[in-house]
Length: 62
Image (cartoon, rainbow, N blue to C red; front, side, top):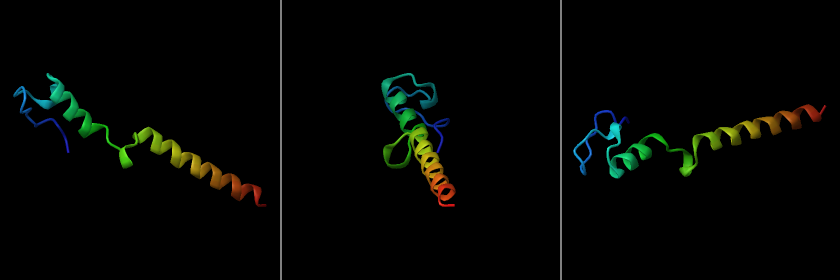
């Protein structure tokens, strides 16, 4: 979902412009969500760490 066409109920401006605190909060909720509330960068780092540990355990097994 995108906030390009959404209109804020508080200030009647486009949400994408972030004119008021309600707009900014709505825009943040649409664009910065991740799995279980975690930031996408943290999720990516966790996946990368898991893959690195798996590869290390596979290599050390030989």
